[in-house]
Amino acid sequence: LDPMLNRRGALAAFVTGVLGSLAAREAEAAAQPSKSPPADPTEVITLWPNGAPGGEGVTVEEQIIDRTSPGGPRDRAQVHTRKPTLVVFRPKKPNGAAVMLIPGGGYERVVLDKEGYETARRLNESGYTCFVLFYRMPGDGWAAGGDAPLQDAQRAIRLIRSKAAAMGFSPDRVAIMGFSAGGHLAANLTVRFDTPTYAPTDAADQLSAKPNLSALMYPVISLDPAITHGGSRKQLLTLDSSDERALALSPEKQVRQGLSPVFLVHAADDGAVPVANSLAMFAALKAKAVPAELHVFEEGGHGFGLR
Image (cartoon, rainbow, N blue to C red):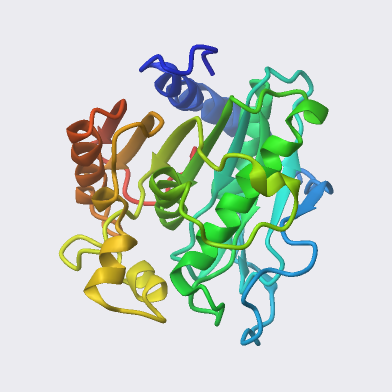
């Protein structure tokens, strides 16, 4: 990340640097014999030591499902998150910046590997301290409904900043990177970082929840039925399906001046989340003079992660 965070190319350099080496890495991997997957990290930060807010009516049970196909890359997902956490990936040589990764899953699950652990390991190679966010699902009975994931995202970035000195990065160099429905959560945090969604619990909650940079990867953005991802919309509006609520949870409608730079990536042939989502967000950002870049691939489909 460029130390000059107000430079328009800072996030572009960050994301395109990650994407730029993929072809060479894939070729190298193809030439190597298959190996056992790397061990999962053991450093975990619990977001809510006294339990996540508004859980009195929650009865679902948290579990991890292994969806790995024979011979394919590892593919796991966590469903019904009860205890939101940050899984920590520390680099060998910290570069002074941190990234909070927000995997997708249609607001029904959190994808572990493709959009979480794999990306964290790749960014570790470049010195970024990474945190993979396991957030709650809005349809699981939490009192905040569609804002339950945002409560977790706000709390998480504040906790990350509270640990900056101890972990060797600057609290002013904290990026977020969200994928698919996680891209919606990242966009929601980008535009509603200062919306009060929970009662402060400790000193960390006095810190800013504003990301310094936001990368939105094939993101769900709008809840407009014409372009939205139907599954995500259904989950977000479980408790309140009014037009007013849909508007509040459509980040492109909440863009204002003064937001941090945003970088968007999408494929034109995405059959799950139409590219119109990223186009709408980009147009809204430019209309409010928010630094933004949009990269659209002709092909790629949905959910490609860094693969």
